[in-house]
Image (cartoon, rainbow, N blue to C red; front, side, top):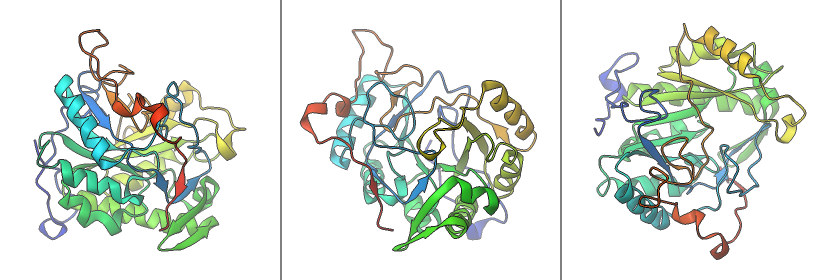
Length: 317
């Protein structure tokens, strides 16, 4: 089902999304083990620096957000999509989830605009930090993107300024509290505008012990008030400036999910997908059941020796 965008002028408050998520494995627990997604890594540049994020590794065996063997062009992405959907009809979602921020790269919307006619039945999805969401919402709408994931880790500046090193916005770099305030303002404005238009928004929140673990219920309340549909609390991996912290235990994650569940629906099946993930979550390395008769290894995973290693970049604005 291809969602029909709803303009902000046509509704007051949050519009009912016209999006079928029954086959979206990142929004529906029932779909998670039955349907697949195609992540095309066309977006290398990022416009913020999170203190838990490091993207310099191109490892085929590492499963976490921001990892890819290499960045691909829109042309290569479309070739990969053709190969994947031909081999496995269970692939229902086309997404851009990095390795940088989807909206900080022109290739993201260029890719979606090119696939509209050729793959009209694929649900179009992006993951973003939300900094450019208000600026790009019209273009997102025109590209037929109907599901958006925004990573929102805090709504309180005292907490948020501990999580982000800097934000690059409109040609200027901001740090500290000011950086977070710009980021969070745009996240919430973009969330509200997306929900007005009938898009379905999932919130990813990285759980950081000792930083935002007691703040998650407030995040849940604020994003729900701004139109979010579902929330995905992800345990932090100890990396970068937070490498000294312990990874949250499953008990802590489940406790905080239980606290947030009465406020907003919780997604509990997250696999921390790579930026080049293809297939049913959990069926790593193939777009279909792992049998000799039906294998769909993403093209960009098989060409390691034919391209330069991935090097992360910072967006200009």
